[in-house]
Each structure stands twice: as structure tokens, then as C-alpha cells.
Image 1 (cartoon, helix red, strand yellow):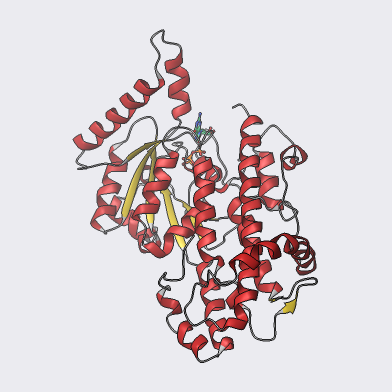
Image 2 (spheres, protein in one colour):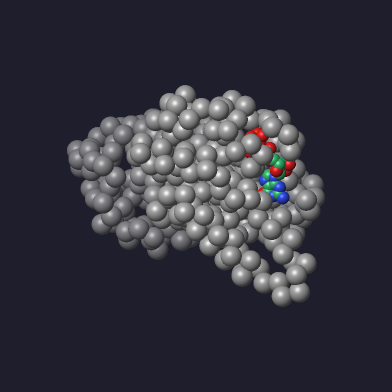
Length: 398
Ligand SMILES: Nc1nc2c(ncn2[C@@H]2O[C@H](COP(=O)(O)OP(=O)(O)OP(=O)(O)O)[C@@H](O)[C@H]2O)c(=O)[nH]1
Ligand SMILES: [Mg+2]
């Protein structure tokens, strides 16, 4: 856990001074604004590649949406992506995946193509190709590079390759994947890409093969202010990604108690603290969205499995997962959890105050609220892990 000496983000530079001057309202306003902005940083990822390579299927899998569901990108063996279409992430509308037609479909040269799709607005390009990278993909990559944008190659439909190779007597998944990867890299090098980044992906099985590597690479190469934005929209493909989300969410918890606008805080029954329920409801809803344990995310996940919504929810322990987060409901849960939190608070009250100069009177409220949010976060993270395991057991066969 971060301690008192952590430096504040630059957006919060004036908060310390506000608190020292006892101007908690000014501090709260700055923090509230900062938290709001954190959840609305735009991220635009372009998905391109030749017709039938699996662009739309990849977009749906990334967004956790079934190919047949309303709002899904249409997918088919016949040509379907004919114009630039934005698909907003269902939980975070600031994140958009753009379904772009392939160069071959549009018949534009790479330079003109990028101009028409307005390349400036994209943070990254993912070029999807099956079963081998074609010259058009490479021309596009070279042009993207010239425009100083990042691109990543995805070799799609790896499940087909593995199923095909399985029939051989000396089958080794590891060897098959290494061979496909090396062939792709070699071909791209021959076509003039110096150090191509190639990821082997099956959109039917994102938890397999290189999707997590793609996620890590995208995250690492994004500007630092966009990394958490990407992390929170990532599908839960592994226990590690859920843990990563938890750590990122945890690092922001310390700001919520201080973000309570003056006059907006109300006492929690049975506890000697007041909280800004609306602000905290926003935090809890954000946790649920990032972990995919809110009602709509669980519905979408069950549609992608062979189980029902009830099957998935059977493993959930937090009252705040799979629930409507109203202010009244949150207050009831806070009161119940508060009894547990209050016991721990007594030990920790003086020990962990993150922003220097915090008035002592705020300390107790601060620690209690942080503790409550941490308890909720831990429970929701645990639920996300159980739901992830359950969903794996209920996986649809393609
Ligand atoms: N086995 C397997 N099939 C896939 C995968 N991804 C896509 N497909 C199939 O490939 C076909 C084409 O997929 P789409 O996602 O429609 O391809 P697209 O690139 O959007 O095609 P256009 O819109 O025509 O440009 C569909 O039948 C998909 O089910 C995958 O990872 N594995
Ligand atoms: Mg398509």
C-alpha cells in the first residue's frame, strides 16, 4: 500500500496547500474533478486488416460482447466491414474500438486510406491478419509508422491452426506457436518491417496464446495517463489482470474520502464518520465496471458462456456485485461493513494519512472511509476471480 510520502499527481498540486489552510472545500473540489477526469480519458484503438481476417470478432471479444448481441460488430464469412464504425466500450464510453475496412476493400493506397480514416485520432493501430500478413497490411504499417503512430500485428484464428496441428502425431502446442510466430516475423521482415511485434490470438479464447502479451505491450507503450484507462476495459482473461486492476483501483482510494464536497457528507449510522455517498457510489460503480461484476457485464459474460446469469452469480459474495448501486443501498452496506471496519480503524487511525497537512479531525473519517472502500474493493476483486473461474468452466465450444 502506498504511504504518506507518495507524491501527488500534478493535477492535485494545490491540494496540500488547501488542506494546510483548512480550505477543505477547495481541496475537495480539486480531488473530485481529478477523479472525474481519470474516468473520462479518451482512448481510441483502430482495428484494421483485410476482409474476413477477424476484425469485428476481435472487437466483440475485446468488449465482452457476443457476436449476435445487439450493439455487436456484425461478423460473417462474407464481407461485412465496409465503413469506419466506432464501437464504444459498454462500461467506459471514453474508450472506442474502431472497426476499419481493409485497404483492399477500400481500394485506396495506404496514404490516402489513413487520411480518410482520420488517423490522427487513434492512439494505436492493431492490424489483424489471417493466415499470413499480406502486402497491403505491410504498406499500411509503414505508412502508420511514417505518421509516428504505433501499430501491432495480430495473427488471428490461432485456434484453427492448433486444431489442425493437433492431428499430427508429434504435436506440440509450444512448437506450433513458435513456428507460426517465427514465420510471421520473417515474412514481415522480408516485406520491410524492421522489428515487427506479432501476437497470436484467438478471439474465441482470449485467455489463450498472446492476447495478454498484447495487452501488456499496449499498456506499456501508451502514455502513462492512458494506461489505467486501457487496464480497466481489458476483459478478465487471467487472475493476474484482475489483480492488476485491483492494485490500480486501490492506489486511488485515498482520494475519495477527501473528495467529499463540503456539506455533501452525511453520517453513517453507527459510526462516527460522515461520507459523501454520491461520490463513493461513483467509486463503487467504477470498481464493479472495471472488475466486470456489475449487472450488465455479468449478463454479457453469461451470454458468452454456456451457463445462465444465475450460474455465474452463484459464486458471488459481495452484496455490491450484481447489484444496482443506489445511494440508499450503499449506505446500508456501509453500515454493515462499518462494524468490521471500525475495529481495524482504531489501530490504524494515526498511522496512514496520505497527504501531508490533512486536518486531524478529518483523519478518522478519512481512515474509516478508506477502510470501507478497501473492504469493498477486496470483496469485488475476489468475486471477479470466482466469476472468471466459473466462466472458464462454462465456456462455449465453437
Ligand atoms: N476459428 C476462429 N474464427 C474466427 C476468429 N475470428 C474470426 N473468426 C471467423 O472469421 C470470419 C470473419 O470474421 P469477421 O470478424 O467478420 O472478419 P472481419 O475482418 O470483420 O471481416 P470484414 O468485415 O468482411 O472485413 C467469421 O466467420 C468469424 O467467426 C477466431 O479467432 N477463430
Ligand atoms: Mg467486419
